[in-house]
Length: 165
Image 1 (cartoon, rainbow, N blue to C red):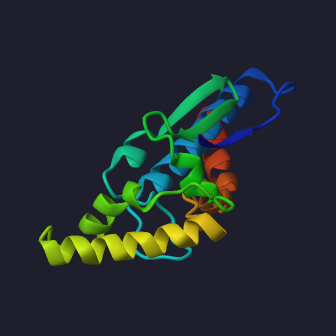
Image 2 (cartoon, rainbow, N blue to C red; image 1 turned 180 degrees about the vertical axis):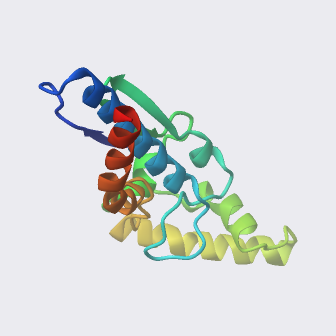
């Protein structure tokens, strides 16, 4: 599972400011989620969830753990979420057969005899790389949070101003 946890300590704030800060942190969580849900248009360094079938993107959610703690998480029904976010080390047992269908779809290779041989050759080469070097990370949660970070001051300021009006 891939996740980022963020919270703020607001134990000693008065009630109006406490309410504003809770609202602000909720807005920050929602904004980070919104950024992580964008479909990635290019690589590297682009924010957004890599989309192949949509299962990973559809598994994203913001969970409220407390008044001031939200968790942006992906992975329910997409067990490979952490593998995409963080990559992996070498995976010695990785089999080419597990990605042949992906190769056909991703590269739009016809399922003719020639196409199947071509897809199998590509899958075999990819599998060799995964067995020896692992998967390259394709982060989508952390970059979304990093992108929203410069907005936090403004979000919190607007939440406090709104509450104190």
